[in-house]
Image (cartoon, helix red, strand yellow):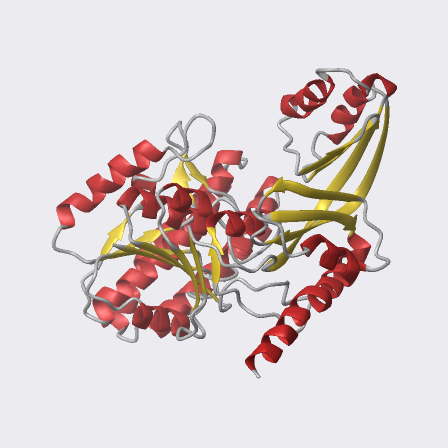
Length: 449
């Protein structure tokens, strides 16, 4: 069994859907997980926002524009008029759901119902194309029947495994299944989701539940790159990463992979392959339990950080001080990304400032508090388990005069983290690329001569 997930760009048009249909051809069992068509979730978010603001007429207009778009795609994808009209009627059920929610003030649960329609629309269209136009046998699996969150809003692994097995059981003779990413139900049974980018997570959870041999994440880029290609020229895809290395990169800003998607795959040792729908022959990136010998493989950046420094003479030799500080963040359910300590101060970062005012008020009971907003974590990932490469020296030589707010080194065998002002982010990424990866390429080329 293989799991193949395709993102919004990969299914963003009738032409792209036809290409995806070519890519999934195989005789082995496979579950295809689809995101909403590119742009759809953004449109649904905008519609929900208008409804929250009481702009019913504008929301109605935007929904009708989206409906017309899907009618156009359906007619292009399904050239036989009778088949196209039947599909449009089925798509209409999703739009009736949205229009129906406009009759009363929108609730948070209503918003989640609206957002779920994107994946329902894309899978309905794609499944109809496979069966009616290609004549291919395929089963449409409703993700809302097996994807579920527990009371802590975490995936309910046991429930997912049991109910996915139940959904697959009547179809033992079938090899191809289509289902939705991102959407699920919560512990109350209401429609919910795995947050933006959650289709990757869906694929990994489904792979773990199905005991898959491999999980494939198909996007519009040929694997996970060694640096941000939007900022740095000359980046290249990394061929192999360990689960831990990939998890670090995803958490600290690599956009190609959802931060949580590696965890179920790592737990069950299921390889994850990142592939490019626009260039399917490219080898992409393989994520597995293995790691290469390179000391530093890639750099990622995470924006939107707030740095907090608590300085207190009471910290000196005081056991329990850090625990008391951490309890403040725990009370406000605010994760800490990075931390450094000294005898009289502790500095840390958070990426969720929702409760910043309350947190700062409590922290001032411990001493003086300083904050720096608009900070960025630069994460360098690789095989640092046995640090005999002089990686730290290369990093700091590359950075030159770029000011560093914090440094975390040694807390993880796969990561060196640096905190810089966001205004210095681009300069930092380019400096590291020149000092680390271009140097590697130069030495590699020289050794080949």
